Image (cartoon, rainbow, N blue to C red; front, side):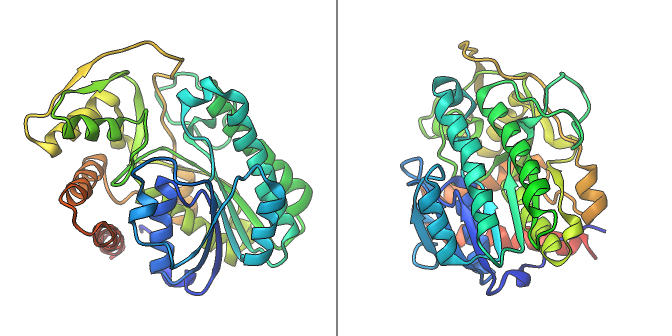
Length: 359
């Protein structure tokens, strides 16, 4: 049976979220606030203008602290004030191409940021459940046509991917050294590529598609044959909450988990652009313009058998539905409608899909 997180579990829970001003963080803030959580966020200023955090209606309903995860003193002060029961680490330098431009900053943020997060979790009493969110790119990419499993080698190629591999190793060390005999359950989640409404990032295929559509120009696709696991942003977020809830109640669930789509969601960038053009309409098209640039792996796929076996978890929306939801949200935003209502509608639809599949 497909299993969904029980959002009522989060009512009145003290939750600490790093990276709350980002795309995924903003969606998670909306989910947790709707669930009645007592939420504290810690992150840099929103990374883009416009940005989802400023328009999604969560400010004033949570404690939002602007700070750098590299600043251990400020982060610890925020932890001590919030006294969280649950903590989620999503703050990161997330762009592969940017990691080539400034590798030192990428490692400082993604490795030492994780050290600081885990150290705060270690020092802050009352922590029951913590999750470090990494990426599908933590694995040594061998070009396999099958999915990577949680026990495969961690050895990301580029500075971003490698810094996230290091983040996984840091988490394992802290688990062994400090949390083995403690009440705190600590897991990592390795998620595939996410899409959804409100992503204004650079160097990501769906935001690039949207910008081209608005300019009524063909979409420029740099690597149309690269295969990636694409999923709607709500898929990993609900998976994170499911992990956190279960290990809060039983520490034996702590571990490392892949979170990605089924095989049908592992498609090429060109196929994803095709789906977007179909959903958008208006004669939108794309063109192959490889402009060089740093190394990017051609094939990457996750095996999510562990999540399915341990939690009964399943993806709810296929990639075509994920693209359709992204276009739906974007048109609401373009028409200057209330994006908070659009987000809540899609969250409710996602939950309903889970309930129907669980019948």
